[in-house]
Amino acid sequence: MTIRGRVYVLGDNIDTDQIIPAEYLNLVPTIPEEYRKLGSYALAGLARTPDQPPFVPPDGMTTPYTVIVAGKNFGCGSSREHAPVALGAAGTKAVVAESFARIFFRNCVATGELYPCETPTRLVDVFRTNEEVVLDLEANTLTNVTTGAVHALRPLGDAGPVIDAGGLFAYARQTGMIAGARAQATPAAGGGPQAGPDD
Amino acid sequence: MSMTMTEKILARAAGKQAVAPGDNVWVAADVLMTHDVCGPGTIGIFKREFGAGARVWDRERVVLIPDHYIFTKDDKAHRNVDILRAFAAEQGLPHLYDVGTSRYKGVCHIALAEEGHTRPGEVLFGTDSHTCTAGAFNEFATGIGNTDAAFVMGTGKLLVKVPPTMRFTFEGEVPPYILGKDMILQIIGDVGVDGATYRAMEFAGEAVMRLSMEERMTLANMVIEAGGKNGIIACDETTRAYLRARTTRPYTEVANDAGARFVTDRRYDARRLEPVVAKPHSPDNRALARELGDVRLTRAYIGSCTGGKITDFINAARVLKGRRVAVDTFLVPSTTEVSTGLRTHTIDGRALLDIFRDAGCQVSVDASCAACLGGPRDTFGRINGPEVCISTTNRNFPGRMGAKEGQVYLASPYTVAASAVTGRITDPRELLQ
Ligand code: SF4
Image 1: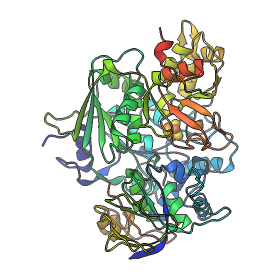
Image 2 (image 1 turned 180 degrees about the vertical axis):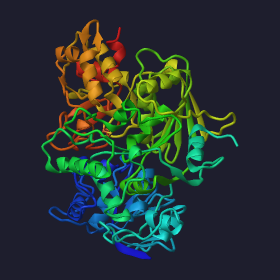
Image 3 (image 1 turned 90 degrees about the horizontal axis):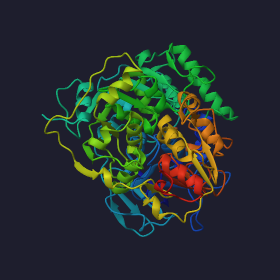
Image 4 (image 1 turned 90 degrees about the vertical axis):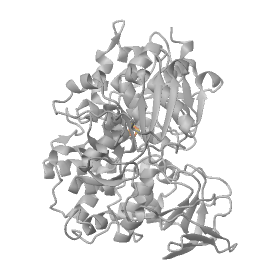
């Protein structure tokens, strides 16, 4: 599977309060209308700098940025699943970071909102916001279409089998941990991978 | 095979003789806690995946504690508490600490302990990253997301990767001006905000085992600020005495095996610790309080699961007694029990609440998370502009307590109280006799 789109570049230690500020945590991710609203507030807590366009345009509900490239410890802070949900609801498909905070990574996988991909090299200095990228999840590469450079990513590791099964619930059903099919086919959100823990 | 406390608890919960760091095991939960911010989403996923008529795996083991957005006019915040209430009624859950009733508690991590839900040897999952606080009670406690919580709600189990343990040993006696908050900020400054990612953090040594349960909870509370999965402390007579007053449920203590392995093993001489502060905007941005004397403050805040326990207020009152604060100072008790304690605990015959009011502090009688995480605009103590705040809370990321323009310094109740008096960051040794 490949994901193509524009990239948004962030630094180290982007915490969950920057991804979705606490004042919007009154929104419930499983209520479809509130799910979309969460998307419109994605990265609303980021301090604005003159050279960085807003992640979600003013009055917009979604983002033009399909992939985020970030530094270390992305998603640190709270266990709020609203964080990967907000990014996924905004239309982002993947975050490529040097490292992830544990609960955020797990929530990405469990909700299927985002691919959390780790990069062994620091990419925040070699990408510019708005450049076009291709993320290849089979070859584990991130290509900068603008410059042509190809960067190797780490495979998803322990999360792999759970992702292959289709997420925590699907994995549990497949391995006999829980019985039967999903009760109702009404996912609140997503469209990304259904994935599970590595944690 | 020799195991650490964390490994032993997970082995037992997984029904195995032994586990090793890196193993992925299905563990049985003893308690699942959720609150008003993450409970409604968890319940939504639970119903979607297990069916509208599904029942929770064990009514006795699900604990619902509304605490985040309580004293606000925000409609959705009230709607979220209604969702918890309806779910508790539908499922017949005995452990709902409902708003507006005498059972209302406030901040979940302190409420869990006060109500006897934190017990040695057990596994506690909670939809809040500071669930790790309960590791002070010699149990495995960690924060999880809504999807994982919904899974636990239906099955009582969760797939967990066994973390290796980093041990932090404090030797010697803690000086009288040092609190648990200084110890954990010291550690986070040393290992960094991702220094314990995927790891357990054990706090050990004479200095730790002399701390009260409340101070131990402050240590375990902030392991997540180092990226840790869980914090853990051995069980001793202090633990048992606290539990005797809170629960009659039997429990099984755990201790490290001789030969248990630690991925790192750091030692501190407690006598050499100094009061420290985490500067904006990161909990690992450590400095000595005495070096920050020229930082002018506009407000001070004492509250939260980290710094809003009764002992935190007693410590603050020791500094504030007979003095006046120089900046707006907001005090929020973490729980209703703490709120009552402000009236019943006295220093030299004067109630804490009176000491604080005499000092010019603004004291909320309502217990909740309040401005620790900003919250709706009308939240008590929320930072709504370019304030410079010193706080006993646990996070100082941009915008954590409200406005992005705000700057938050994290410190112990002693340091916050001393700084509130002078209006600048102040080493409490200047004011403590
Ligand atoms: S007091 Fe603050 S850190 Fe603690 S649970 Fe509430 S919001 Fe979270």
